[in-house]
Image 1 (cartoon, helix red, strand yellow):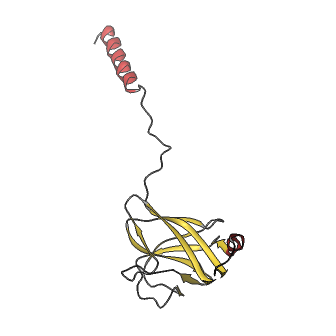
Image 2 (image 1 turned 30 degrees about the vertical axis):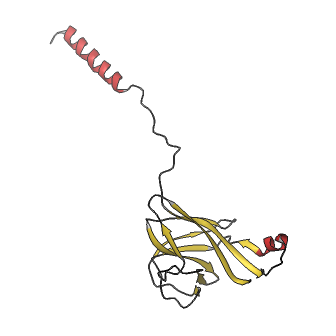
Image 3 (image 1 turned 180 degrees about the vertical axis):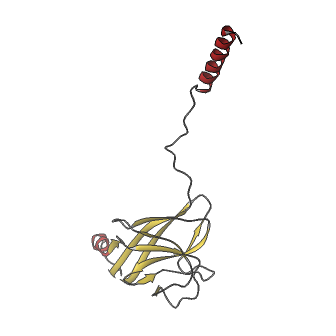
Length: 156
C-alpha cells in the first residue's frame, strides 16, 4: 500500500471518528424516575375535640408523628382491633417519619395494609369494604397520598 493511500485511509478513519464524536443531547437527569408507593403524614391526636374548641387549642392537640416507624404489609384481615402487638402477614417495607411526621414508602401496585408504631404495638385506623385493616391502594406509577390520624387518645 502506498504512503498516499495510507494517509487517505488514516484521514477517513479520523473523519469517521470525529463524526461519531459529534454533539449529542444529554438525557434529562433532573427528572426523577417514575415511582409508585405511599407517601403521607402521621398525626397524633390527643385530648378533647368536642365542640366548641378554638382552633388555637386544637392545633396544640395535634402533633406530628415524628420518628415513628411506618410499615406496609400485605393485606391484613381479621385483627381484633385498631392496635395489635404483632402482624402475621409479610411486611413489604418500613420507613421512619421525619420531624414533621412525613414519610414515603416505595411499593408496587396493589392493595396493602398501613400500620404506624404506637409504643411497642402497631396501629391502623379503619378497614375497607373487603375487611382489610389500614387499607391503602397503590396504583401503577403513582404515589398514593395518605393522612394517618392516630386518634386513640382523643375524645370526640
